[in-house]
Image 1 (cartoon, rainbow, N blue to C red):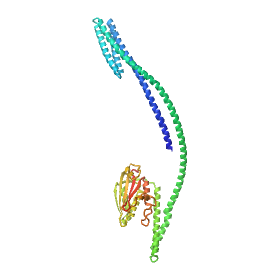
Image 2 (cartoon, helix red, strand yellow; image 1 turned 45 degrees about the vertical axis):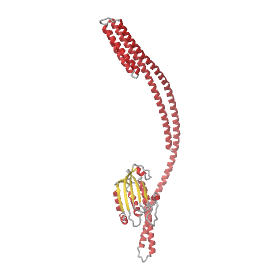
Image 3 (cartoon, rainbow, N blue to C red; image 1 turned 90 degrees about the horizontal axis):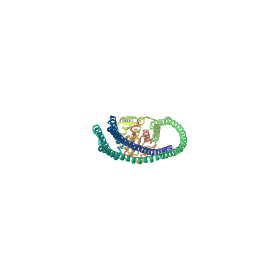
Image 4 (cartoon, one colour; image 1 turned 135 degrees about the vertical axis):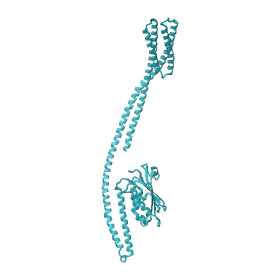
Length: 470
C-alpha cells in the first residue's frame, strides 16, 4: 500500500515536472526566437550603417582628391590616403557582415570593382595634377564612375531596408508572444503547484494512515514474536527431554529386553522370544525416530557459514565413516566432476549420508547398490529447466544416481515431507525423516532439490547449491 502511495506522489511530481519542462522549453524557444529576431534587426542596421560609412569614406577620398588638385597642398594628399584606407577597411567589414546573403555578396563584388576603378582613376588624377591640367572629360568619367557606385550603394541599402522591415515584423511578433507565453507559463506553474500540493497532501494523509496501520501490525508482530520465543523455549525444553529423559527409558527397555532374550533358551519359549524381539525392534525404531527428530529440529536453530571444500575428500570421509554399512551391502560409490564446492560443512555431509542410505536401503533383493555421484557447475538457465527460479548466475549441481527400486514420480515432492513413506515399515526400515532433513539442509543453503525416478529403474537426486555462497 505504501509503495502505491509513493508511486502516486512520484507520478504527480513527474507530471508536474514534465509540464513545467515542456512550457519552459517552449518559452526558451520563443525567447531564443525573439533574441534571434532582435539580432537580425541589429545586424541589418549594422550593414546599412557600414555601407553608408563605406560610401562616406569614398566621398571623403574624392573631396580630398579635388582639394589637392586645386591647391597642391600635401595635407590633402594625406587625407586622401587616409580616406582610401578607411574605404577599403569599411568594404572588408561590409563583406564580413553580408557573408550570409548571396545576392548582397554579388552586389558587393560589383561595388568593389567600381571602388577599385574609382581609386585607380583618382590616383591617376593625383599624379597628373602635379604636371598637367586635368581635362573636363576626365572629370566627367570620374563622375560617371561615382554615379555607378552610388547606384550600387542604393541597391544594397534598399535590399537591407526590405530585410529590416521583415525582421522588425518578426521581432514585433516575437515580442508580443514572449510575454504571453511567460504569463501562460506562470499560470500553469501556479496550477501545477496547487494540484501537486493537493495531491501530495492527499497522499501524505494516506501515508499517515498507512503508517498507523503499519505500527499496529508491527505491534501485533512483536507480540507474536514474543509468543514464538516462548514457544521456542518450550521446544528447547522438549529437545532436552527428547535427548535425555525420553531416550533413557528406551535404553533401559532395550537393555532389559536384550538380557531376557539372551537368557538360557530353556527358560524362554520361542514364542516369548519372538515377542521380546518385536518389542526390542519397536524400541529401537522409537529411539531412531527421536534421534531423527532431534537432528531435524537442530537444523532450524543452527547457523553456519558456507566454506569451500574438496568434494572428493568430503565423499571419501563419508565412505570411511560408513564403511561398515557400505561393505555389508556390497555398495559401490563412484565420484566425478568438479572438485571444489561451497557448503555448510556441519550439515552437508548429513545430506549425502541420507541419500546414500536410501540408495543402499531401497534395492531389489540380491542386488548390490551402485551409486554414482557427480558435482558440476551449471548456469541459471539449466536450473530453470528443472522448474526452479534461480537467483544467481551459477550453481553447483550435485547429482546422486542409484540402481534401486525407484518409485512413481507422482510422489517426488511428497517424499521430502516429514514422516512420508512410500513403502511399509515392515518391508524397509526407516523413520520417514531422512529426506525431510535433506530438504531442510538444501533450504539452509538457499538451494533447490528434486528427484527423477521410475519404478524398478533407480532414482537420481539433483541438488543445486549457490556457487557464490561465501
